[in-house]
Each structure stands twice: as C-alpha cells, then as structure tokens.
Length: 387
Image 1 (cartoon, rainbow, N blue to C red):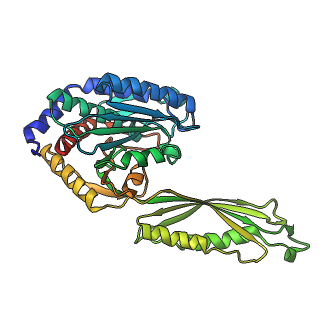
Image 2 (image 1 turned 30 degrees about the horizontal axis):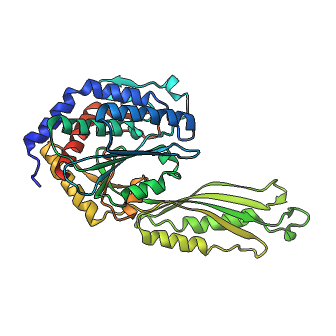
Image 3 (image 1 turned 60 degrees about the vertical axis):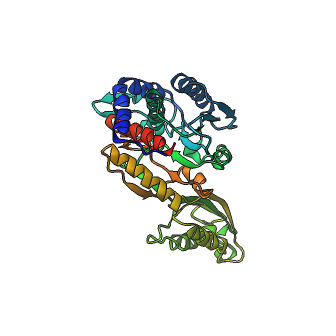
C-alpha cells in the first residue's frame, strides 16, 4: 500500500470545498424530510428518497437489498466495489431522528454563516452527506478506495430493534467499521458504554392502611428498598451508572400498595461490569416474603471497548488528519450507537466521523459547514489510506 501524499489529501479537501453549495443543497433536501423513528410512512418515504439520492450521487451499487423493518424503518444495504478484493469496510448511518412530524414547520433548515440548524442535522443527517461527498471526491480524483458496504437503518434512536441482526450480519466479514454519528466536539469516539434498560415490577398485598396495615405487604416499600440497592451499584471510577428514572405504584394514600414499578437505565464501560450488574439484579429479593418481584428488559447495546484493532485504526486516522492540518482527538462517551454491535463482534470501529457541531436531541442542534468540509475530506483521505 502506498501512503497518501499531503498533496493528494489536500486535493480532496479542495475539491469538496469547491462543491460547498451542492453539499449544502443535499443537506437541505435531506433535513427537509421528516424522519421520526415511530412514523413508518415518513421513514419509508425518506428511504425511497435516499435510494434515489445515492444512485444520483454515487451511481448504482454492485449489490443492494432492502429489508423490511416491520413497524420500524426499513434497512438498506448497498455494496460498492473498491480497489482490490479485500474485505469490505462497513459504513453505518441511521436516517431516523428523535423529532416528531411537524417539527419542521417551526424549525426549518437554516444556514447562517458557518452554522446550519434543523431537526436531525447534527444527529445524524450531515454525517451521511459528508460520506457521499467524500466518495465523490475520491471518484473525481481517480483515487483508490476499499470495497464498501453502506447500511442505512431507520430505528437507531429507539435501540435498533429491527436492524440489529442485519448490522451484525453486515459487520461479520468487515475489515473495519466507520460510523457517521456526530462527533464529540470534533473528537472521534473509540469507546462507548453498554446500555441496559430494565423494568422492575413489584407485587404486594393490598390492605387498608389504617384498619389492617399488618395484613398488607407494600409493593412501594419493596420498590424503595430496591432503588437504594440499585443506586449503590453505581461506580464512577469504573464508569458504571445505575439510574432509577421513573417510578410508579399504588392506588391511594390509605391503601397498602399492591403494585409498583421502576424503570432503570444502566451504563457500563466493560463486560465485567455488565456481569456485576446482571448478578445484582438476579440477586434482588423481596424483603417481605408475601411480595414478589419480576425483572424485565435487558441490555440494549453491548459495550464498545477500545480494542487494539480500534486503536490502530484511530492511529491511522490521526496520521491522515495531520496531513490535512487537523489535530484529531479521541474520546470515550456514555451514549451508545450501532457501532457497539460491531465492536462486540471484534471489529475495529471508529465512531463519530459525522458532523462537527452540538445539540443532539435538542433545539439548538447545529453543525459547522467548515466542519463538514473538513470531515468529508478526512473520510475521503482515510478511505484512500485503507485501500
């Protein structure tokens, strides 16, 4: 493999910068499609548009398949040829957003200088547009790239219930995985926590709280004891957090509660900590033998640990960035992504290759236009180096 030259990488950046207006037009068209995770009709329409967009910008893929997502957005997998016959690089980009239908009416796509706003622009529609223009730049310059496999899913924001098997299948033979989620203040994400979502359901015995309290077994009392035990599992030094975020139960102040429930969010930075939390949940027992407890839910996403393969891949990306005059950083974050699934299979993963900006899931969501040019050039140069 011949290392990319500084002049070649600069050529890629200059070409993308010369097409800034077209890049922004693409982003405007994409953000102007509403894609809430729970609106199947809007998601289907958006994926139809994306199919046409990708074909117009990148040409027909060598192979493609669209898999139904049931109640969720469908999944599109496109394979694009590259230079050589090696394993493909998997590119992950979700097209659903957290914003409900109608949001655009009061918050349209807007460009003000270097700042672009609009629902989903940061998380993560700009990331896909950057990727498309990176590939166009390589093609325009006649530069090599590895075989690529692009996966678009419409259920990432709700845990990827339909797309997870397809992500794992697509990652199975991948040489590496690049995730075009938004960056963390410009940094790539080489570690992500695993996420567990659990519900504890308590059943007690109802009784009159004033006349016959001893005949009751309070589900709320059981819940309160469990909450304290769960919060004691938090260990900030190891990166483990356990948060009981929602509780409910009982029917009246004068009734010993017969039912109660607690919704729990768990974040862990290692599989060992996930096992510790699992053991603690399995070991919970009611204080009153007349009460019962059922634990529902499980691990929504496995831990994305910084493996030696991921470290090497980041090192390569950092060298490429330096040739573009960028000081690329890496970080560990508490949020999860579809990259977690690929990392759990042992694949090297670079996440956060998407937009530079801020405000994911918030009304101040925005991206930098200059940042889009830089990250698109970085992606192009990195793919060239991986060829």
